[in-house]
Length: 378
Image (tube, rainbow, N blue to C red; front, side):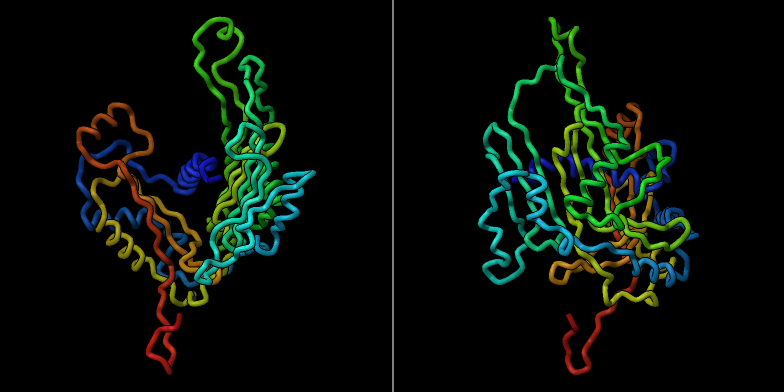
């Protein structure tokens, strides 16, 4: 399975998203206090919800969030045959016979992927593979370009020369040009930004001595990994112009080109037809809902409680996701960076260090009933 190759990168992207999406409310040191009282928990939730964004009247905020700027979905923009010509060059690729099966044996929409490949996955030679959702409304596309096995001389291994900015720009160009990811749904990075969503991948080895010890370092940076979460423009507030949406992308490259790329869950979406701004929850409702829900599962102290507004998919129709504005809360029982002494102290307390992440819709949803039928409309 190709997903095996991408698991480390997906995990790294998830870690990056949490790091960049939540502001910290952490205290200076871990506390030995048990779970906070209901009153203290409400205060923590109150402090985490920015008053300038979430108020007692959130109808305007919800109206803006329900009107995101959406680009052309992959279902209409991604052409697999053009991508195969671009990625595989002369000779193209072999398509899996399964590509023709667009429904399951029971007649439902097939949610698996079509596979185009060149070479043998289990062999030692070069291998390329492109995978994409049979129904592109689901928004999954992945590419792997594996070189043939070769002996690596650490002393002669050239380091990657491209800068983080160059890597980011090349990754965006690849996603937009080859995978046809809509540029309108990629968070803009200011030209003056000092930190970019780029990681450097280094190849390291043990150096036991001998001629290698003087000839080569213990590691060499060989690739750049660019992590790109989906962003939707909403212009809800001067501090809230973009919010995270469903989907993420990753591109790994060196100076010669793209080695791996994945677009995961970049689903075709539209606002939920039953979500209405006049049904926006008040700040008081949200505080009570969040505090009660967290209290029901909390098993230890709280060091930080942080939030972000987002658009989340709560249902799908024929593969198209239905969006709802939501508050995502992260509850952390320990500070992000613990000293060794603090880690020892926590281990002696036998308390969990695992946090929780929960989503809470900003809109009250009601079942609609047909006047001529006792069953709710689906």
